[in-house]
Image 1 (cartoon, rainbow, N blue to C red):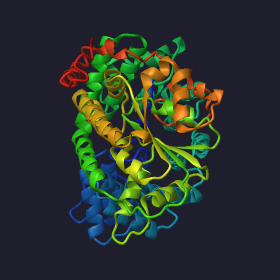
Image 2 (cartoon, rainbow, N blue to C red):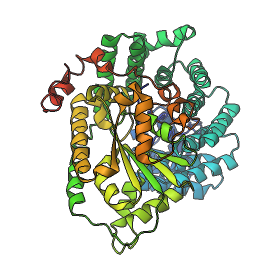
Image 3 (cartoon, helix red, strand yellow):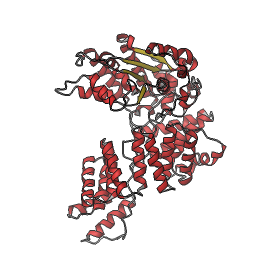
Image 4 (cartoon, helix red, strand yellow):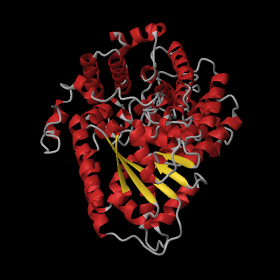
Length: 549
C-alpha cells in the first residue's frame, strides 16, 4: 500500500495557464463567421471582429489581442469581443483587467452565457471559488444545455470535496454531450475518489475511446488496475507517434503514465528513464520551491522560540489532531484509520491553520489563534474531533503545541529513500514543485526531520512518532499503541481502514482501498541507480550514512 500524497494533477483544457486545479477552458469561438483575409485600411466594425475571431480560432493569440484592443480603442462595443479578450488577459496573468473586460461583456449582454462561463474561469484564479460557482450557475440558467459549464461546476464541487454534487453535475455534462471525453475523464477521477474503482476505470477508458489523444486520461488510467482487454490504450501510450505535436504538459503526463505502467510490470530501469524525462520537463515548467520551504521552516523555528500569541484564558476546546510530515509518508492511511471513529471529521489537506495565524497577526486583532482556527473548522463540521492533514503544518508544530488547547500532533515518517522515490513518482501539482528534483527531495526531507526533532525536544508529550514501515509490518501493535496515546477506546475496525467509505482525494486513493500491506517497503532498491543524487545528500549526514547497507 502506497501512503498518502497531494491531490492529483489538475485537469485543464486548451489554454493551460491557470494555477487552479479546476479546468476552465476558453469556449469554442463559433462567432468567426465571415473571414476577411485582407483587412482594408479603414476596416469596418464587423471586419475587425471577424479578423480577431479568425486569429483567435487559429491560436494566433498575439494578433487576436491586437485586434481586440484596436476594436475597443475605437469605441466599439461587442460582448463577444470583451469576453474573448478577457480570457486572453487572464491567460497573460492580467486578472484584474480580465475580470473588468469580462464583466463589461456581461453588462453589454446580460444573457450571454459564455461571458458568465469565462468570468468563472477568471474568478477561480483570483481565489473567488464561491463567486465562480454562482457565475457558472448563471451561465447554466441562461443556457441549460451548456455542457462545459456543467463540467466545470462539477470540478468546483470536486475541489471543495462535495463529491456527490460533483458526480451529478459531471453526469449532466455527459447527458448533454454523450461524446464529451473530458467529462468522462473527470467522472473517472470523482469515482476514484469515492472508491468506485472499476467504474472509474471504465469511465476513463471511455474518455480515451472518444479522444485517443487525451494524454491526461492515460495518466489517470495508469493509476488504476489494468487488464489484457486494455491492450489497445497501452499500445497507443507507448507508441512513438503519440508524443508528436503534444504540448510539454501533455508530454509530462505521458511519461508519468508510462513510468506507472512499467513500474507495475516490474520494468524498473525503463520506468526510471520515463521518470527522469517526466520530472526534468516538469521541473522546467514548474521550478522547485525547495528553498522557499526550507527557509520558511527556519524562520518559523526561530519565531516559535520568541512568540507569545495572545494567551488569554481559554474555554474547553474540541480535540484537534494534526497529521504532519512529508507527502507519501502514510498520512492518508493514518487518516483513514482515525476517521473510522464515528465522531471524527477528517478535514483533509486544508491550510486553515496558517490562514488563522496570518489573520491573528493583523493590527488590532483581539481574537485568540485557537478561537480563530476553530471558527474556521466549525464552518466545515459540527463534530468535536477533527483531523487536519495539511502535512506542511510540521513547520508550525511549535505554534500548534504551544497555542492550540487539546491539540495532538502525529508525525508520519518512513524510510527516506522509499519516501523520496514515492514523492518523485507521484506527479504532484502546485505546492510540491521540489518533488521533481531528487536533490531537493532529499534536502526538504532532511530539513523536515531536523525541524521536527527540535519541536519534539520541546513538546515531546504532544507529538507522536508514527513510523509507516512499522505500521504496515505490524498494524495490530502499532495501531493499538497509537490509539492508546490519543486516549481513545479501542475498536477492531481500526485494523481495517480499507473498509472506510470516506472519500479520498489524495494520490493514495487507490492504494488505501486495499488491506494494510508492506508491498512498498524497500521499493527504493529497484531504483537505486536513479536515486544516487538523493543518496549522496543523505549519506552526508550521520543518521543516514549507512542508508543503503
